[in-house]
Image: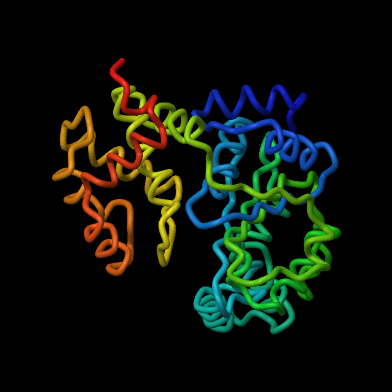
Length: 303
């Protein structure tokens, strides 16, 4: 997968992802040991982006399974194309085909709909794909038990086709927003890494890396304000995704520095709950900017 930990760091930076050595170590070991990597952290801190960037860095295909409540094995693994099967049955019956021949024909790869897990198992790409199992905490515990079997052997038995095995294991990355605890048995199958909210310095670097056209002063101001907002008592603290959305909005408004009226008008880019917006507006945008400048003087200093 990756030649070394330093190679991971360089690859992440080359794809404009500001990582760190612990994350790079986890990614390197996931590839070297052939073990899934479980990334946990608050929503919006860049967990999903790790899988996207890893696929880009490796020149591999990203196969994504988005988890949700009620997700079952069929939706994640495979389904038979029943309408197409019924059409073939009718066609073959009209031609006088035997029942045995018809059954053999309709239960073939031609009628198999590959869902993400089966697609990852059967992939014959030049590079093993990156399999992203996103927000696994949203799925039911029964689905976790099913994942245990798949991730242990990376093979699956389809009654009509037999046992299918992966030629080469994909790089598997699972993400969780920790809306509930993941089963210990699944965690034991994985390497683990927690992605926290970034420091001020790292957040400014992320903004500059992801939005190359932004003014350096504005990137630092945005990072300082976001760090200050996260210290508030909020229903939902904003993540890096909101930071980038806000910074992109400020660029679209052709702002080169923060001012109270612009901050007040763009709070909807940062916060997604009315109560949180009302709380910050009650404090005042000017006060927010001043708090940020006091906590991070470098962001307020002229450059």
